[in-house]
Image (cartoon, rainbow, N blue to C red; front, side, top):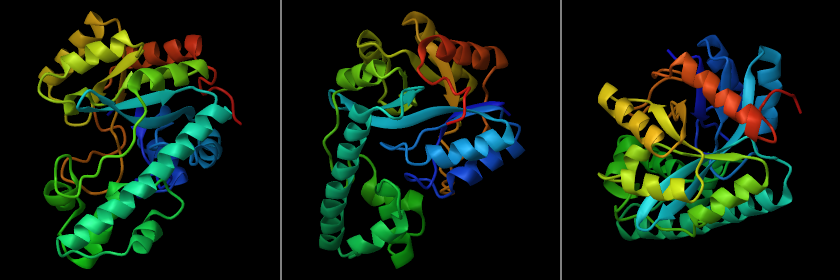
Length: 285
């Protein structure tokens, strides 16, 4: 069990539990420092901050950004930025608007394949969250078209599947620059999902200014961890770690903090944020 987890999702995006629940559960599991990294939104951070302060947790402001490196889907984790920055909030709003446009197209494609679902129902499932494919998957499960969220992705919604709809994404170099301008840092999320030779996009992102790499992650084998450590050393990247917890019940899910994350690397990560970030998570807001 790790004592820190810097990749967590809540009902503010595509997780199934509230920010308060995530903080409380993390505390029960021995987590001392963490980050809520919902997709394209910071809407859950105020609630998470209240719970974290009450529980004595160190909460780092975070979010996850979807970008493309060539044809590769690359996710970036932003930490410690100025949540109040208008330029950042405007950007995140534009990304959420793109998600709604993507939903309309996805629903149309699923209907053409004999699986009609109501766009309004998907939005109901999402609630106030930034709507995404997991909400569509849950609507498909509800209708009985698939047996699980994982099956929905495997057959219809996953990358390259019939209802996988591209949406506008910010250029990764611009994303890195945007976050840097507002006092944050950027880490490369779960590089292992960027294809067989993911060292290539990692090197490109490092060249564009990425600060770190998610080295410790759910389900990584010891060999995968060592390779990510080698990439971190090769490209002078700080190491981070996270469970990518959503609570969806997929076969590869792990509980909050259920992954390897050496204490020395946790300290190095937090010290780096203390030096570089506008909000390193030490003060309540």
